[in-house]
Amino acid sequence: MKNILWYLMILSFPFIGSAQQKVKVNPYIQPEGFSTNGFTTYCLTGKSSAYLRYIDPGISITVPASMPYQKKIAYDTLLYSSLSSLLFEYKNYEGDANLSGYSIFALGNYCMMPNKLLPTLNKLIFPNKSLLIRLYNWAKPFYKDIFSSLTVEEQETLIKKLLTAEQYVAYVLKGKNKTGYQKWLSSNKIKPDIKVTGFLARRVQKKQWSGDDCAYWVDVLKKDFLPLVKNKKIPASHYQVTDLLNTRLMIATDHIGRYYILDTKFKKKTLEPYVYIERQEDSSIRAYRSCKYSDYVTYEITPDGECREKGQLKGETI
Image (cartoon, rainbow, N blue to C red; front, top):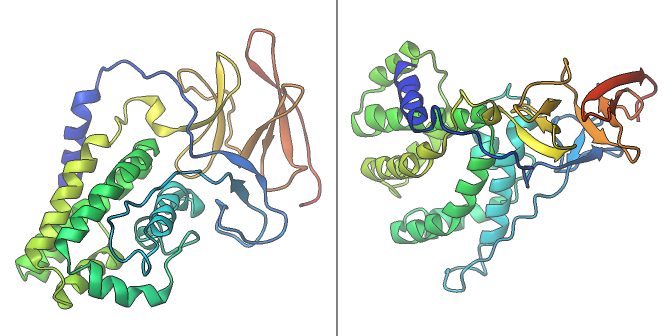
């Protein structure tokens, strides 16, 4: 863990003491209400009962005409599902699960990769380093944009996966030292991540990549994404703003989908978290305690721009 904390501490140095950015609404995290009829991909609770739905993030993706194998591979669909996974899956499982398969490899609620595509990827894509580099450079701006929009907790979770992969490559794939890798995991109190290490191991076993290739891709990701990790000392880093109520107040969610009313310094104006906060036509605010349309607390916006609790109702589940 010392190594990981050291990396993250170094990242924060350029940002410490910098001026707080102007508050902006996150363009990708926009809730639209509770579900009423079963599972869809736009949920954030990972349950079969009622959940919070989010508006499609509306990311515009264009595949270059020169990209090969477009009849076999829907590059735009695969990229869109991966970006949606990064945006939603950590909240979807409230941070409690090993999310490599969901957030990184897009195998969860947003998966758009049919099993029949795997042979094509193994034959045409993974062994072709020059094509992989082209694909990465095409997709990189999208990933950097989404990664930059995440909370620092989500960013750090992903970075820890990357640093774990780095150690696996060094100890196991190149050094042939599984014992050393296990000791590193133990000393840093990190659980093994079979999804990440298994992906790298399969590339080597299938002779698609060498250990040096694995190290190359880890280094590329570190170079491109480590500088984007937010400073934990800045309050704004811990939230994604979904609505501006006035010049003093806003609605925001944290890394596991808990909603708050905050002031512009990101101080909480509501003492408890809510599963959803909704603006009403009369300028009041409904803060839902659970996925029930009749279980909410009402907040009024006062003339001086503050919020004040009015009351609450409890009723039947939708």
